[in-house]
Length: 442
Ligand code: NAD
Ligand code: G6P
Ligand code: MN
Image 1 (tube, rainbow, N blue to C red):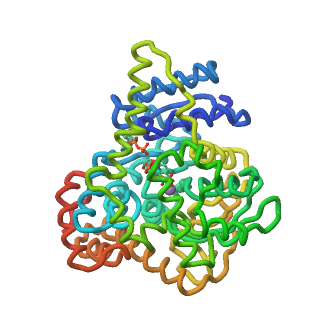
Image 2: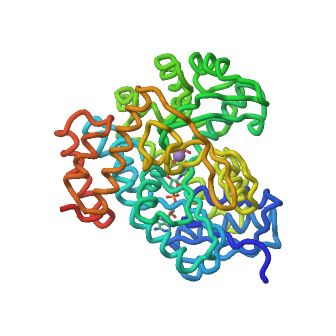
Image 3: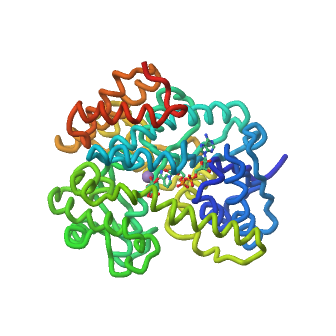
């Protein structure tokens, strides 16, 4: 019998792949037999693979790395599939942003009309991946999915493939926890949080550091400074001016809504006018990523091809890779690690529908997540979540039924869109821009 796991990174050409691979190699308890990169864009993946091979050569030269654009070959016998596809790539991210901004709306990759447009591109390829895994991968495989918009992907995959072995995750809460740990001057591992909401739409209700309740202390800090500690200014993530702006914005929200500590993504839903004002249609976030993270990755790949040396450390920042590897380890070895993941509500939040896909703490076993009970939530939060859940549900139903009407309803219902007139104008432009990516709407 073969020992160790076959791990596949789907979306091997992603800018995050080298960082994830480094974290896989760091996790000495995880026995890896083969590491595969799989992508539909072979040319792009080959470039990123050069960096990956350099990472493996440096940190685990005995490991075999395979690179493929053939789903059958890549997925056959796979134990863990880490998914991080960006359907339509950054080029479509920019289109979403610019169409929305032209109408004074939020086109962020996961929020507002941007998130809905990206959702409509991603549902079908994610279902296809699930079906391919059911056909070729090990019968006990797990797909651990980062592909955005994770909220819509989770809603669609659970509805269409309820038996699928997929766990949808997001690194934002744990990135915020890393900021909290810095603020409190404790280790990330020493924090335990209570949290509820949808993906990119949730709140920390309690934070404990080594068992001590530090919630009020953190709220005071966040109301004043946002999720920024003095040390954070030196951190690579916060060197990015957009993220610095985002982490600071949490102070505005904390002051206005002092019940709970907000996820940073609330800025798009609660401070939408400020965000539109702050955004530059000629230098959107997608454009910044193309000129920043993507450029750095492609430049490093080019240098390796020329036989030059590169600084690998630049790819190992943040908790993104560490978090997904921690989740894989929990599913592999039944560690019962407590993590925030996206699961069907099924009564966990008592006064929300069972089929809402909620982000809450769960203990991760080899059979999957065992979510904690959250209980009832107050009306303000319940109302916000119900509206967003209905909106995401309409996107999924609209995609399945190819219904223009349902997608128009979703766009109209989203709290970032001011009127049905604006919703319709944006939708009609997005249908044109997404030809070949969206289901045909009738
Ligand atoms: P990227 O554009 O650099 O890479 C994405 C890769 O996916 C590309 O190489 C592309 O060819 C590939 N791809 C597209 N469609 C595919 C398909 N059907 N099958 C296989 N591969 C496919 O993107 P990125 O900025 O590195 O981000 C990757 C993904 O991870 C995005 O969806 C992003 O939103 C997501 N992400 C999620 C979280 C989270 O918190 N859930 C965090 C970070 C990134
Ligand atoms: C966080 C979120 C992800 C999102 C990413 C965007 O990590 O959790 O869902 O994809 O930020 O970062 P970017 O640098 O591409 O704007
Ligand atoms: Mn996320």
